[in-house]
Structure formats: C-alpha cells, structure tokens
Image (cartoon, rainbow, N blue to C red):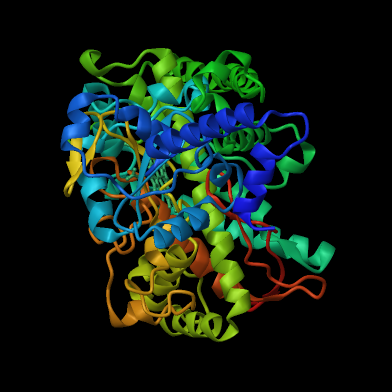
Length: 539
Ligand code: HEM
C-alpha cells in the first residue's frame, strides 16, 4: 500500500467515522504539520521561537540545520555517547560544515565544523561567556574561572592563575615533582605487571595526574601505595572528582526544558548539592590548614616576589596572599581551587591512555620514539624535562593523538552569545549556545590528508601550532577563553610519555585486544579502558 493510500485509508475509510469529520481531522493534521514544519525548519523549535522577534525576521539569513523531533529537537544526539560524530554527520548531510543550527528543547545552538567559522566564534568577544548548566552551577563552577561570566572577576582569575600557576617559571619549578610522579607510575606499573601479568593503565594515570595537580594547587602529594588502604585524602578527592565528572557529563533534561527544572527527574540537582557540600568541607579544610600553618610561621610561608612568580608557596597560599582589592571570599576560593583540580586531572590521564593505546597498536611508531629517546638520553640515565625539546618525534605523537582523539571533541564547554551578533552573513541572536566540533575538523579530508590514519610523521613535515592559533588543530580551544592549563598539560603529558616509553615496551595483553571505541562523557574516553602488557626496557 502506498503512503497516499495509507493516509486515505487512515483518515477517510476507517469504520465508525463519518467522511466529513475525518476530512476535517485530516485538514487539521495537515495544517498542524505544515505550520510546525515552517516553524521548525531549519534548526528546530528554539530557532523557530527566535523568529517571533520581528527585527530578527527581517535581518536573518537562515542557517541550515536539522529540525530534529518536534519539541525535543536533537535531544537524542546528546543522550548518546558519540555526539561529536552524530553532529559531524549532520553537518555533512546538511552541507552546513561552516555553520549549522539546531535546537535541543528550548536551547538554540549553532555549531561550526570548519576552521574559519571556529576561529570567528572562539576569538570573538561576543562569544566570551559560557552557558552555565544546572550541574555546573550546583557544583560551584559559576564562581570559578571556567564558567564565570566574561568580566572583571573572570579577568582577575585569569591574571592570577597565569602569573602564579601557569607561568613558564612555575611550570619549570614543578618539573622535578612531575618527574618523581612519573617514576612512581613506572614503579606502580612494575608492581601491577608482577601481580597480574598485565596492567590497566587508566587507574595509574589518573592517580598520577591527580597527584600532580594536587601538588601545584594544594602543595601536597599522596603515595600510590596508600590508596589501597583507603585512608588517605587522595582517595577521597579522587572519588569527588570522579563523581563531579560524571555529573557534569550527564545530559540533564532540566537544562533544556525549564518546566522540568523543578522536578529534578534525574536527581542531578540532589546529587550535585550533596557533592558540593562534600567539596566545601574537603577544600575548606585545606584552606584552614594553610591558614593555621601561616599563623604558626608568622605569615612567612610565601613572600610574593615583585615579579609575581618567584614564590615558594602553592596556589592556596597565592590566593590567601592576594591584595585586599583582589581578595576572594572563602567560597570563591573553594570554587577556584576545586576547578583547577577537576580540570587538570582527567584531561591529562585520558590523553595519555589514548597515546599508550596507539603505541600498542603501532609498534613501529613506538619503536621509533624509543629509538629517539635512546639516541638523545642514552641508556644510562633517565629522561627529564630538559630532554623534551630534543624529542620532536615524541611531540609529533602527542599532536597526532590530540588530532585523532581530542579529549574535548566539542571543546568540552560551549560558548554563549552575549549580544546579538553575526557570523559571516548569519545573524546569531543573544543567548545562542555556540559550539565548535573540533573532532569534525580534525577528521575532515579537506583539512587533513588521510584523517583516519595515525601518522605522527605529518607533524615532522609541517609544524602545526596546537595552542590555539591554528584552528585546524586547536584541542585547547582558542581566544580569550583558551585553556589556561595548556602548557602545564602538554609538559606533563610529554614527560610522562617519555618516561613510560623509556621504561617499557608496550605490547597487547594476551587476553584482550586494544579497542579504540570512544565514549563521550565530559571528555572523550576510551569506551573500554586499555589493558596491556608493559615489558621493562631499562634495567
Ligand atoms: C590535555 C590537557 C587539557 C586539554 C585537552 C584541555 C582542554 C580545554 C578546552 C578545550 C577548554 C575550553 C577552551 C575554549 O573555550 O576555548 C579548556 C578550558 C579550561 N581549562 Fe583546560 N585542558 C587541559 C588541561 C588543563 C589543565 C592541566 C588545567 C588546570 C590545571 C586546565 C584548566 C582549564 C580551565 C580553568 C579552563 C577554563 C578557562 C576559561 O573559561 O577562562 N586545563 N581546556
């Protein structure tokens, strides 16, 4: 039966309905569908609602994009775990790589899958705010740098952290500590190999990464062995970070359907409030301990040099030491410190897990990196920070992994249009959420040759900047809100990778192969964590 026959049967020939009544019903349905499709296309409900602003109708050039389901829009692209791929396919289908419009419930989105429009969005001060999700708000992030509105408070936080946490001197200052954590990880991996004959690297990398950020921010570290006993604060913090990650990664219906907000059907608000209270106690305790120590030592712990970064204290001391006009309240301080721990931990661990997976999958590439390390460092001493500038192939491996598996394929946190603005000819109303699909750009054949092949050599031929100036590969974002921890993140990943490659040959486990399936939570993780064998190279 053809579709037309089916409709005719449905509306006119069903027993018990008069033909006249059925004809009216048919007309109503038809009108409803045509009005709905007019309003919903392109871009769906939230875009349709923005048409109600008269001047918008007059000046608007429609941005191509899917309508999605009535009312829901593209909800199901976001409830799945491969949102970056779904959005990339849609941009291709709608020929909307440069800009695509869509709705999720009542939230209006644009997304760029092209370096030019990505640059326009990320570098424009019109998109320098971020949409604050309910979970981010409840977890205190609206007071931290990442979600703070573009303004004086945010500028102040960026300046303080750029000077005292992320300056080249501070990063170099923590080089020795990073190296020691790397060695601890090597020892831990040897222990695990001895016990199990294989190693699940994720846990080791995560604990190492947490410890690293803990040291620069809170000035303390935890022993690897202690976590087994479960009595150390590192374990507690690790579970707080993991739960925060889960909550921020969850698709929360309340963010896009305001009426559902007060129902908290998924229990996100309740869980966030519980977690927020625990974070307050944990970080508050650390601040109090710092205060007590300062009193004990007559406030001579730190001593901020005139140059700013010549100091011996940690980031908590920096915040406690701020001049009156910049001083933060305790609750702001808790938010800022918590965010640093939170952001700095998973991104680094996840990237390293992807790199090691690639090393197991490409033994020739791994061997070439090891040969480079052996040539530069020799076999009688261990690799350190000062060797890194002489290891270009290792850098290329890190870049190629950032290209194939960017930890934030959608750049993790979106941007928000502060004012009515334009991208090219396209009018973007204030309040529109703007995203960049970095994954789509780094997998676009028109941007990268053989984008699905893991080929670090491409970066030996062409030196592509990854810190935000070249939008073909900007895994740390770009513009005013570019990741402030990018240099620290890269320094950590490069050193630990060099240490792990110098110490071990990485080979597949006898029980399971490497699975590069992805799962997008807050970051793009390996769906099945890497389990492999690490065979010692250096005696
Ligand atoms: C491999 C490591 C990392 C990756 C891939 C990464 C990626 C990103 C991305 C994509 C953004 C959004 C940028 C934008 O909107 O343009 C971001 C923001 C941010 N990152 Fe990172 N990041 C990493 C490491 C770190 C570390 C180690 C820290 C701190 C310890 C950190 C702290 C932050 C903060 C505070 C923001 C918010 C900045 C703002 O809104 O002003 N990140 N990061």
